Image (cartoon, rainbow, N blue to C red; front, side):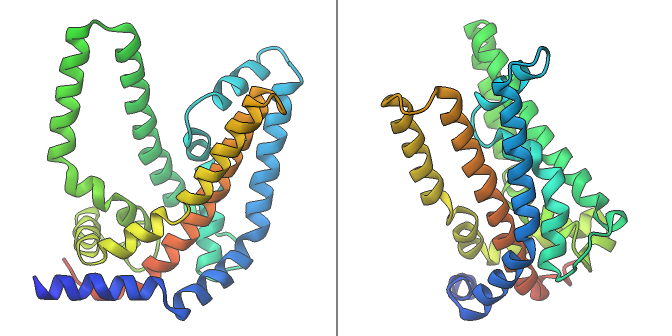
Length: 253
């Protein structure tokens, strides 16, 4: 117990260390072009929604009216490979080495979106009895898979970064669970440190829409754009933290 508490304190100290933020600054500097390109593509997609193009504008508008961070999830296969290259100090992206990042991001976020979509359909279309059964099954599934759910962010980083990306899936899961246990406070702080920024943007967008300064669609676009930006920065923060703290947990086969 004392060793676990010491590891937690060390993880928190590392988040506030100069070494960590120095590497974060360098990684963000390298990732800046890809971040701006992704935001530019997002603005172009949003512009199509305002042009009222048949069969194109309506699906985009439906996507913008979805709850955050759906749009950030949908864009993730396009920006995560560049962020990984920036964290590793690479000026170019080797797509053969980044295919696993695209595959795992599509799989992980696809399952999340599928679960959200299924709950949405059950909530609005199914009977009360069916809804209760769905909630019960979901609660049981969450309890059973809670260790995997908590360690999935570390797993998603380990499976695309060397040397863990060359090991078996079982070894990566064991590595991810152990690191999540001993680095939990630091990981939690890194993953949620951008929430205040997102909250301020959400409140600003709601106020602008309420005062009728912008149309509702612009407010939705502002929220999703801020979420997309915060997710990209958050991934850099998380990947740098993982790279610096992973070594003690790599020999967990």
